[in-house]
Image: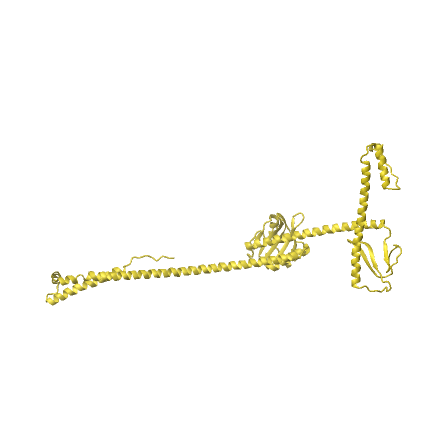
Length: 452
């Protein structure tokens, strides 16, 4: 609050006292003049002085200046007090007005701050909601071929950016290769396999080298920005690293039509979005690698299973059976006793065909099979294939167990023998009992003897 300038002024008490004293002097002057006129004396100064000294009544009248001065001074004192009270009230009113103006200004400023904060909160809420939508888009895609374009399109759509590009490093981490973009210029760059040197000119090169976000609020003044003729309308750009822990494997490039389009809050939010994109890309890569490994395992397993089944079938007697409506009987592989036509369903196990289930009409060779009949036949074929596989595995397990028992018996018989001749004889005898109709011989030789 500004202070009023101080200056010396005559108070009302002094002024009233002076006026009262001056007015009081009129009483002695008028009284003395009247006394002289009544007495018939000449009206001059000596006569007035003599009259004042000789008339006691005039002595009382001479106190009028003092009395009036006192009364007038008292009135002036009251007037000064009233003026001071008025001044204090005026000052208080002035202070109140200033305080009111200050309070109104503070309220206005606070309201503006609240509005700005509310706008920032609304903008941040909208950004988080956009991130959630992008995350839902990311979760809906599992392969890199569909994931990367959907990320670029979703970020551009949700945040309203002019261009969104995703760069991934090559195996040698020498170049950052553009793998997805939403803008028309970005798609032209994709067609010519656009790539940037890691650590080279441009924001993406800087980010992929340093692993730190980089913002160009005005690309016309940023020395790190590399002018791209495919994106001529860019005025602001931000690039964020895509990484797992400290391993940078790419960059998220976002460009805007506006100058100063990215604030520090935008950098933080987009960095969180880049982290989600990094995780999604790594998950897609891991899933793709797992699928490729699974495909290789399934292919190898199918090939192994196919070979095992071929060997198993070759070791088995002819295994074709037919049901004639009364009983099931075995038939020859070379003799096809099933009627022509009908329905044939393969017995398939992990992609390997191990047989065929054939259904033929007993009387009508043109019979049409219903969906229920086909479903029953297919379900039976599936369960039959599984049962055959279980039977084969059980048979192989039994064979392995028999082999282990035979080896165990031979080992038990010869384990306690120390005489060389008895050991050799016992070994031949035990092995001969396990392999009938087999001639067995053991010949001891040495490498030195074989070389001669």
